[in-house]
Length: 609
Image (tube, rainbow, N blue to C red):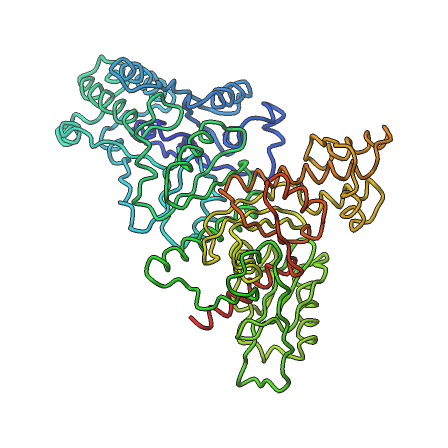
């Protein structure tokens, strides 16, 4: 990076003023593998963007930085960088919280001080023409766009949105949206009349062009403050337009350890009818994989909504194995109909669909005929390599069905490993597939609760089985199958025994922590106190149920509930969840196959569309 580049971190940063000195301003977008150095110099609870600012400033290729007091974290980052003495030029603009006349005068003084200091540092004059030429006018939002709102969006998030959202994404975050008012005409004319070049004396108010610089600063301070406010400003009413009905969907981003935008999200989610997806990142690229499923599932939901609005609901195939009108079906789903594949299918007449769900623990496969009958299914271990585990399961399910690849009209992959499975026709997120699979197993279900090996998800369904809203917890093993497996090892019993023995509890035991490490310590203490094992297991079941119920409340979950995933086989968790939700939670004999079933169902729909 050249010495004439100034890094900045806020839409209120005076980058046009710096451009007037010939500086090239670049937004801070550092995303290191870890924040080890930043956390050692500051604190682990700094927000991800604050750590990114530190990582950028500590980069030996970065020489200049201008920050603003958008929050206390930026003040802390400035103090650390100043103490390190690692930058040739470091400046902090004290930004007012209001936009009145007094605040404008305060910012004008800040800008003059910065200009004087930067003029001495760079040895350059200020040119009004260069400053005005640096003003970027963003294009008008296109119809059907998706609004990205909230805190600073890291590059990895922008990349995933660009890859995963099929509509234009408008960046309205605190560092993405920068819209300045038009400058007065006399400033634009100053360059042509020879008054646009301001020397150090002019900036100090003593030169012949001092009035030109004064007019620029007076206009510029107001233009910066009059932007759509960020959440650190006192008056934030102007932000309502960011989530107006003009957008097809809203992606709301928050940064770990930042509270400013979490409050706004709660308000927006409770008032808007526009589909909304909440994402949180920590400032490193390690979040990218966790974002992908959420973003792709949201895009699939938006596409489904758009198709429904156009009169094409995509529901040309909706098999219902339960008897029509059976009101109790979601609470006691009927067994799935199995149909043996007839011999003699030929490559010229493929009439089967393969669905494969590649999860963290198991890989599941289902073969269906075009009428929606399951002809074969297999649940196998994913193992150390998703592609290898999928290949073994596919071979087994085709053998079971007496079919070959040539008999398949379509193959659909889902799950975390969906992109790693070769020779599949299409990949669809597990959110959309679990919704379709749940509707196949229990058509009256309104809410799907899926607890798998490494994540938990709750999906609120429309009446036709499409996704209305969803939420995922995949940042740690809390409340997942791996959590229960770890507790089973601590209690020295098979996971199947853990499922049954918790039903025999006598006295309530509270497990306060959902962190696997801390919960294990609690269990060890309970064992040392000679607490009966069934009571400990029931405490674990209730803790999982409460965490999952909280996810259900976030998406507006409602009965009837259907539980899918491997943990659906755990009777203690299912019973505890029914009690916490105060509503029966149904399971199905094919609950673990739900994702693969949904993949096959969606494959059939595509063929019949």
